[in-house]
Image 1: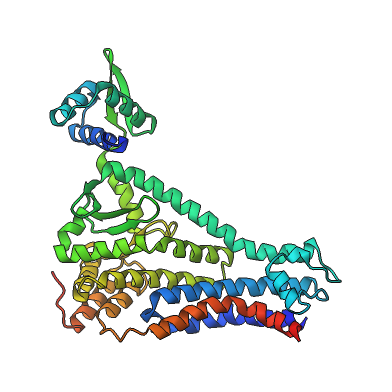
Image 2: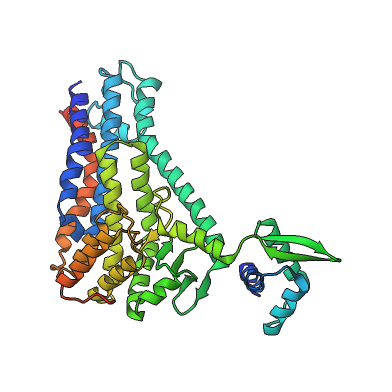
Length: 122
Length: 301
């Protein structure tokens, strides 16, 4: 039994890749190429994604067709904004390896590396 | 009244004069974790001094200390003191409020950060790709980033840009650094420093403690990574990450933290000094007691 979150990700993966309104049947058939999954399960999870605001849906004939509210790139960009931590608003939420810095500071880093006798990798 | 004056002076020394002197040197960088504890000890000490001073100012005749029993009673239940003078709710409400303020801020910061992380994680789990090999989530983005989402359901995240600019050895080291943040629960120490800075917004101690805590926690994570990885690799990874995403022509005031860390990584290690470490831990544990002792000891005589 896979976790619900993984099925959510599988559904979103396909909708982002296909870039067109898709029925639950199409998603089920595609997942079934790799492993068996019940139609009702996918329908339920698609409903959850719709309720969470990830998917739009519209009636096409007798079936619902689903499409992502936003593209994968848009969501990624929002995460990156958090991750780059340019705003000082929520510093305690994420632990960055290194913060965004300006060219002068990067220069200073390079000099310090050189001074230690280690050539920075290009 | 003398007690109140002594406490105010103590609070001024700890809150205004000490922080700059402590932050100036780099000796604390040799012991990052005990140094974080020391900043926390100073913060507690300051809060207690202000709370006690406010008590003594409001109830100048109502001394808490009738010998040692008074000290113990104060540390226990301040309401139970049976001393003459202006006591009761007003005399106790202010000092209790002073002590509660940072605690309330701490709760607020913890909740807010947890909420932000949960929201971030829910998007991350759908958008990112889990890499079993790296034990991390990979975000498809050209800008190199590496970060940790600490907490009960932690995530280590790297962007595909990071995979591009780092060698496998460098990547390992950076991941070790991020895992150290999670296993060390650094977010709690950082939230505490944030809380103190929110409670006492303009206090030099609060500002410095927050900055220093953030830097010292990075150093602690660096040290953890350096236990199992060569220092040149971590240093060059730091440079590669910074270089890979510096915006051209823009200037960002990020502070010299990265440079300080890089120099520290490359500097030869001094011998481990467990004694010094112990002394600092003991100091961090003792410094909160100083204001209590300072104003209660005279009553012991």
